[in-house]
Image (cartoon, rainbow, N blue to C red; front, side, top):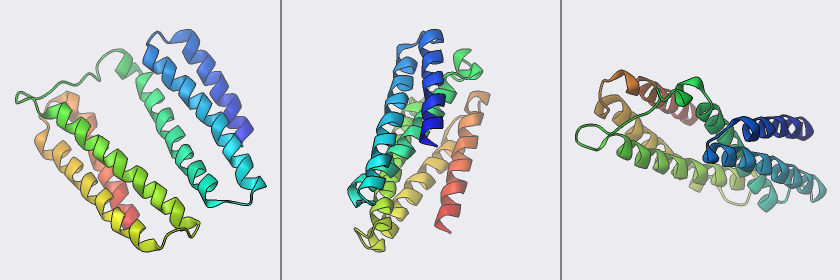
Length: 178
């Protein structure tokens, strides 16, 4: 599987480097390619050393990071983004996107910590209680972000996709907790 992902990522990175003008998108592609190589090395070490918790935990976190980068590349190279129809601006009181950015960052940090704790629990490094307790932080940060996207963002068409993402994020986290 790792070899197939590496070939696909090499193809994608080559395409992005040839076609894409935006430096940050090119950097994302290079970073994703580097993560695939690093992930393959960690996978090999995991097999050789029979699942050591530190390597296995890092392997799990890198996989999630790679997936996130692929979603970012998909959005950044989408027709909506390129045509600038995905451009969002602050609300009249100046709180819209900047608040959403802060809330999204908080959710991201909470989810990463939760992933880290889940991997540590999976390898019996920690008991389940820290993992379960931190799940409440993930749920709370997601709930606050969901509330903001539904009730505080303007009703303009440009925010419609953001609202949909907020609903889906809250739905997925709610099902995860159940």
